[in-house]
Image (cartoon, rainbow, N blue to C red; front, side):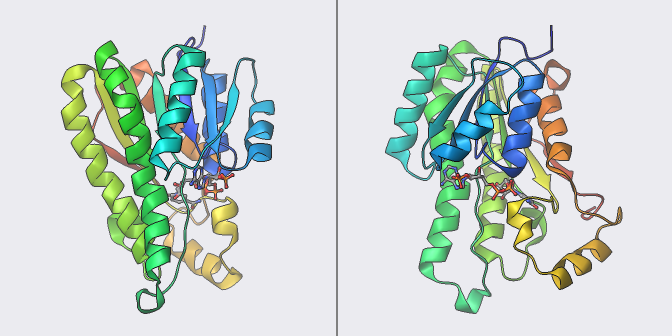
Length: 245
Ligand code: NAP
């Protein structure tokens, strides 16, 4: 038996990149997965890539509170209850602040920060009642340091850090843990948008000299979700090759 056998986990944005690696790792650890994304084809193919059976794909925009509540109801009906929530769905809409539109600000805050609020809101009461549950938020080192051209993204990720620490304090007495992972630069579709010059410059800022892999983040999710992390809550842990110390 693996350490997460019989646990049910939701991974938002589990269809690609870090979320897909997290879903695959949690499936290997014994979880049954509910994978959420906006694109049906992509969530279906993510589910098809998992190691065992019983996983389900759901299409939902996490920034929509009604949509989110309905999907969580459906997941609860199908699986009974949810043990692990990984708030991973995220987008970027980068621009220098002076050129950033209100729409780009709202879109990024609504997916990255309000999306985590919507999902957590829909699940927390049940976890508290059962006096068990794990919430893991995927923030970013940029939420710790800021980044030129990413005022919206950095604000959303810094917001997630405050959210994580507050939820951790409120829910700890009810047996629910909440931590956040702050990846540095990880090789996914999101970073594929960067030009060669930027990637070269990034390498020079990473003491380990290379971008991380989605599985580097997934390994930490597996640890934080499992029994070995039972006394860890309210923490922000970087996975960044030493970029931010
Ligand atoms: P990615 O490859 O672009 O994947 C993003 C995932 O989120 C996709 O599955 C996408 O699926 C889903 N998604 C986006 N908007 C959504 C919405 N409104 N509702 C539901 N699902 C949505 O990104 P990634 O690089 O794996 O990043 C994953 C997380 O790690 C993000 O929160 C990101 O900010 C964070 N992060 C990434 C890096 C990095 O270097 N890659 C560094 C630090 C933090 P659909 O498009 O099909 O909806």
